[in-house]
Image (cartoon, rainbow, N blue to C red):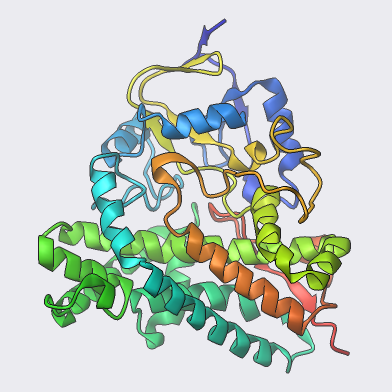
Length: 417
């Protein structure tokens, strides 16, 4: 039986789940109420949450749930909200990117970006990750106390995405501050940092375009941003605003998720020492281990917002036109109908596709790179520090509080004494 919902529906107020030590009991309590619920976030944004894995896959393929900037603006205006401060720093960009467009524009953009992440470039990136990780581990060997974020996860993710896009080394500390603040809803300087970051990217795009040789194929360009500029010159496929918007997306989203994935893996392998021992003893489990981290506590707990283009019936609920919708990926990845004993962290679990990087047309473009970085980072870290321990207990871990499930501080002892 379908029941219609809308302005008079019961609203469930929810916390910033991504910043909680263990948000999963909260997810389960909501899901027990129903598979589709009207929620209000800690930032005051009202949206419908989807908690059922089958319905999640349906919704993520359904083009009535739009990612277009126009649809998002209408839904924001309905609630009297500003995009960035309400938690929409990427979707509210002026130009088109992979998170604020629908097909066919999204299809065009994705094809262009796919050209720049060729197998050749991915293999070069693997070599870069290996070199970077070895250097970071050597530096950590000289320390008695570690912060696994500042010393390891953040330098890996930030250095790699900056190398990919060709951000000069002297600008990277500035970029880290601007990107972090721009992605933190409610931060006092969020708007100013976002403005500065866009201005920086505008200048960077202009410099790359001026330096690019249109006779050189995109795959032979020195970095992804140069490749996108070359593709634009060759086919006039990307506008100036699209280049800037795509750069913003890749710089911000392309490093926060990797910080979260590697950090969550190190936390879980400390919390479950039997699983750590299995991985140390059998390196062939590495890929499965990363997939289990993604399923058990991945870096993206909820999808970015979508907005309904018309009234949509799903899970016995009719969501009115112009309402926000999000899928609770983290809860869906513990669906007992799909995963046996889903609340158990088990790196030997038979691989079953998960929703950690989304599903459908908006499946995360950087998922292969994130997995590659995590595999190299965890393998080399365990080789160097097989007996590492987190210090100060669970309370010592500080969560970033951005839209990504990532720790900002992970105190640890390398275990070398």
